[in-house]
Length: 290
Figure 1 (spheres, one colour):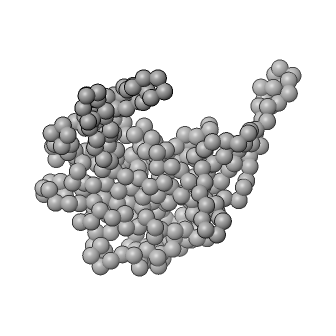
Figure 2 (spheres, one colour):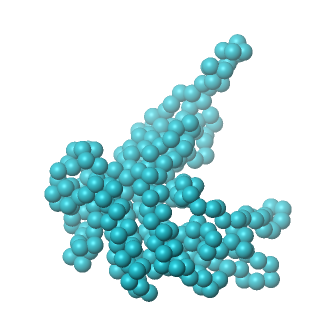
Figure 3 (tube, one colour):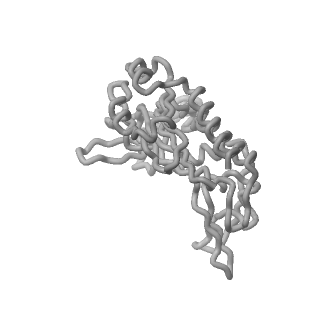
């Protein structure tokens, strides 16, 4: 089967969508720092993967506890295979079994962290349980939580030539099932959301660029940036090699960014639904020709 890679880099807008370990009564957002000292919040790839699996609408793979005591780990059950569970088809597995070397299959769908494009300024939300405390006439409990609203950028890549194939279990799915699974993944990403602390954050893309290529590089992962509510179009244009141009598709929400006209003119942007329709068409064409 001919090597083919799908890559998509997406921009969405969200607020305070992934917390880490708190300090005292302060809930801390997950953050990373750059060389100039600026801090940026991020939503971990594990969190995004969790939401994708949760919203795929497919059966969850069976799991089991392995080991004992402090060395007990939860892993996918030995009888769970990609034939029945798209989750492990997309994201791989590690299965250990006593007396054997176990089985390992690397992920064929990979996700980056979603990193904010606007730096964290230390904003805090002041929280109390006043409504409940007043009912008892007792003192309130007080807590604080870091808050940050920003555009976020992340990249998803998929090895199309490896989806639906597991050499460990000698399984290869039909072309029709491979197409169905990839289309289901694309639909999930298009309508992705995240439940966090009583909120439902919409992670659907506002801007997206990608395509189906003969190379498996996440071309746009370090290229897409947002500044002053504008997509940095020139950065993207300069990153598109001549061999990539015919396969690259762009989608944008009309009017969301101040330079929507520039995005349309220089990147020939479509609507977000049109983007996903075209990617689905390219995926189907690839599988049906192999």
